[in-house]
Length: 191
Ligand code: PNS
Image (cartoon, rainbow, N blue to C red):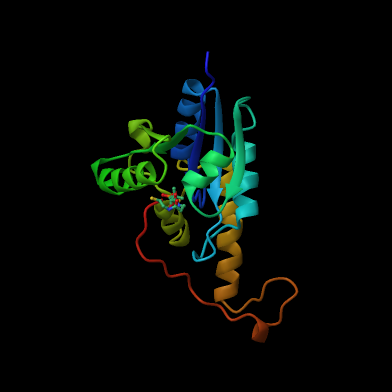
């Protein structure tokens, strides 16, 4: 029987319970699943790629057939490189559909041999996105039920540092004049 390897690409900034739910579902369907974090130099991420990788590795440690990797360039090129035949993506609500369809069709145009498979996370995660997690955390709300505890801890640490930074307390090793605090402003984005 042919073994099916899939890749689940995304930004994962930060990884959420919704991502974990999808990884779990994917790991049951595919023989191998590679969670692939996009290294996107144009974005202004909350977490470095290395941090996101560590969080995802810890979150997926119990899944024997799941690994975590990073990539840049086209997802289809990455998928071919790691010999994945499937790109796994999650669809939470109708609002995701247009963007995901566009991406899936473009990926098919670029690489007709690759299939995109959509899976739906549990309904309880249908409102959940990394962007909202960042926003809720930045505005002081609790993210405890939205992300695994290890991620919540990391987000809290980030927010503490940002808060001190904005109040004129420089991060360790920097003087106030070296630390020019800029509040993070992000335009709407999917992730
Ligand atoms: O978690 P996200 O931000 O929704 O993930 C989007 C991602 C990383 C899957 C998408 O931006 C992507 O595939 N980027 C890699 C570049 C690429 O292949 N672009 C063409 C897609 S049609």
